[in-house]
Length: 256
Length: 263
Image (tube, rainbow over all chains, first blue to last red; front, top):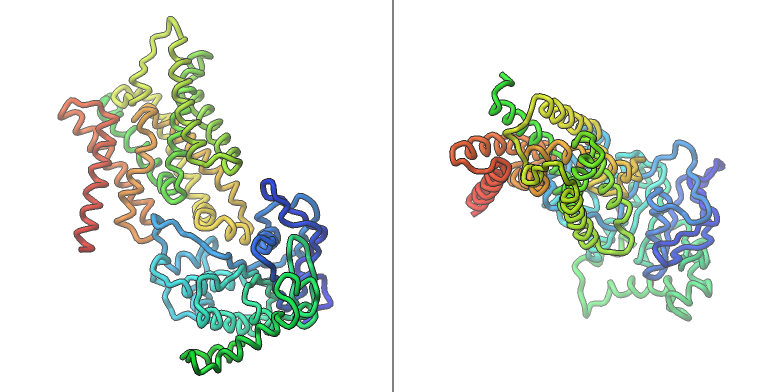
């Protein structure tokens, strides 16, 4: 999947200050075409800020964010609050800011794992449907890079497993690179090509196995064998725990 | 035809309301009602400046409203809560404006006319200014419509699509200043915000798309202007406040209609 071309995004020496806080300092990051990179880190470690800096929503205090010329971004925010006074249905939302052909919209909804609910008001969607509509809107940009900021926040375990499965399918179908922020370490570790552990700066990065065994990572997420791979196994085992039957455990295993 | 003061008043009212209402929808969607208030109240300061330096009132009001809009846009998000900041600025601007006007000795100032509007005294020249301003506001909103809408729905989504939400905020600020400058003659400083917010709020219950809501609001605003003009003639009441009363009555009716329908 690695491309010999210039990276889609190249971040160098990025520093960002929000109000009195130095949120990010000295961050370097490259995203190559087609790879899945996940950012993990504790709350307030600057994960969302990094994504917002890449789309250009925040001015860096120092350093640069360079996009490969002509690169198209699809962005799925952590949450989107549409004011209840704004009447807007799914089709109108997906046509913002550019009008799309009806066939493209139907296909994007399908790829995002949704039925044809174009006429449905945005306010009438469930949390999972809303996130998938946001994904569909990002897909309509025909992105080279898809940025997902904790896209499964507010979804239950089943919903979030299904969502990540959808992401895999999207990558397989479109071949776009994916940069996502996630709290769900077991998903991260199984689905990513590379993991970046962030805590104001890049603590460590590399393949999931490398990061999981890095001391910096363990300092943040647990010691000894309680790293993410352990967590993954634990969760995996848990699905077979017959004392607490989970009707969806088969599904969950599949997603992992 | 334009020699009849009632015709001129009707045209002034409809022009102002029809331009203000779609802009008002953005004011409602973006929760900028206080922003509209602050911009409108700054108009009093603009009146004082215009009379002091003997420039047209329209120019003075436009400059003051624009200055207020830019100040609020720049200061918001830097410390004070937005509504506190707007409360401070809105009422200070009004108070300083009123005090400044009182210093203008020798000039007879129709204070009530500026505070509550004087639509029956609209001249042909006023009418031309009002329609030119209203046309500019409508054209700006129509031209920027999609970008304004995505910037309203999600500033970061706009960014990712290559649209600068701050630029759209500036477009709205400019539109607000223009609207205030033309509406001061129609409903006055105190009630301009009502002309922005009430038709939009009424239209919310009647529309299922942003476009329909903006057009419905424009229709309701025009209806309020004509209805208010008629009612003030019938009952010999001040015209500006009567227009707002009609708009408020339509709001109550649409709310009742909605709750009956949903029950």
